[in-house]
Image 1 (cartoon, rainbow, N blue to C red):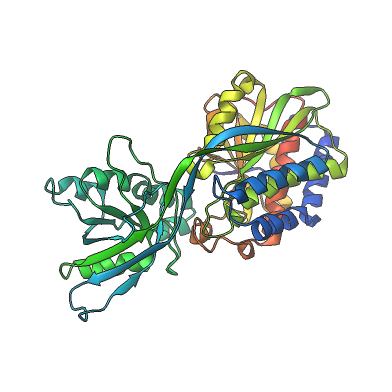
Image 2: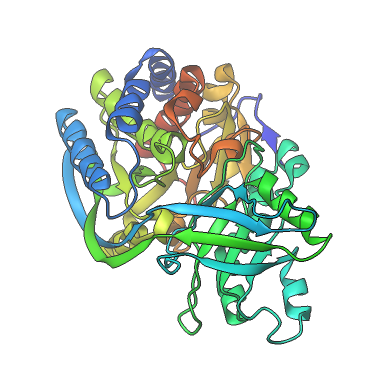
Length: 459
């Protein structure tokens, strides 16, 4: 249920604090800091695959930017995978009605963690399935040496109806679990239809979860058009495909979460966290996933410094490392700060781009809805007054939310995000500066409100 607060409601804030929230909101809308920082992060530093030199460069840059703002910066070491994409090629080598001696190029991209094919590539007969149920129904051994294609389309209508995350969750299971399932059934390689709503031959990468007790076979995502082509030809008869992936799986390497505190004046031990993940996939430049979340969080500290605001509680910035590869940074933080989790008053994460925000999604006690009513009124002038309970706050803060910490993220227009997510089109030009500013306003106002409230957010 979505609720819009237009009535007056008592709350945890004074009139002066509500005025300060309005100042923060208005400053965020006119201050280009977040957009300028994103420009540098996406365009100058570029892709930030875990274990890469760009990821380390981003750590160093973000840390120095936060030091410049006057925050207390620490680097929290975490071990992350070091996987290298290499070259990726695929082509149909035979198909019903094809001209002898010709091939058809197929657009693929390796899935994160995929092992390589043999150096010369591999060729196999293609088997197209639409579900795990169809895989289970196959005769044992019938996939041996073949290339399995999972052709599960992304539900665009569901996404257009405001349920983009639900559509993603339905399809992403095949990217995450398909390679293990196919390898266990004897397939030589597994291709998965891209998990996204854009049909521009843009394959969508992402992590795949290999089980330790099965052979790890090469895996890649197929562009949607090529998945349709293969499915169409497979209905006509036998077809074969040649696949070459020169990926490398190297030993884990150290990296860092960037932590920066804006200390509280009365309860510095109590934490309100603003965060995004600093790593990205390497096809694009990680602008919407999750450069926007990083710079919104940076903007929060920037605005507090610029406006000379020092809340009761500490506002803690965290740039997470390793979200795309299994949330290594988040797990490290939860372990290293286990004794302090009770002092975390609230956690905010932005990891869903920067399209127009319509309000806040919260995870926690039902009483949070009424508690946030005055905040909703402050955000109403920018069209962000909807207060919505939900479970999808962010993968990095999930370990803290599971321990009872209230979680918050902006609710936003979901129609466009999955056109670009995890593709080569995740670039700086996809970010609208006005929407980014409005999103940054939602985060900064919420963080200040939670950090300066007389009574902390209910649990």
